[in-house]
Length: 50
Image (cartoon, rainbow, N blue to C red; front, top):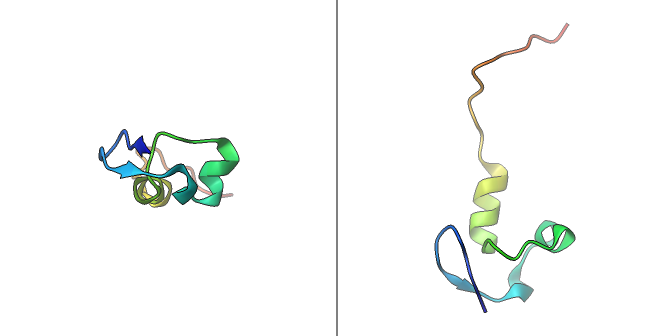
């Protein structure tokens, strides 16, 4: 069992999603991983597509 560094919940490494296994992430639970990966950030600099 691992403890998530973000929410401190325990999770089994076999619960990780494909992308986590791909980069061998063992720090985040699948729920926090999905939250991080789907989070949208507001950018201060906007670059117009030309």
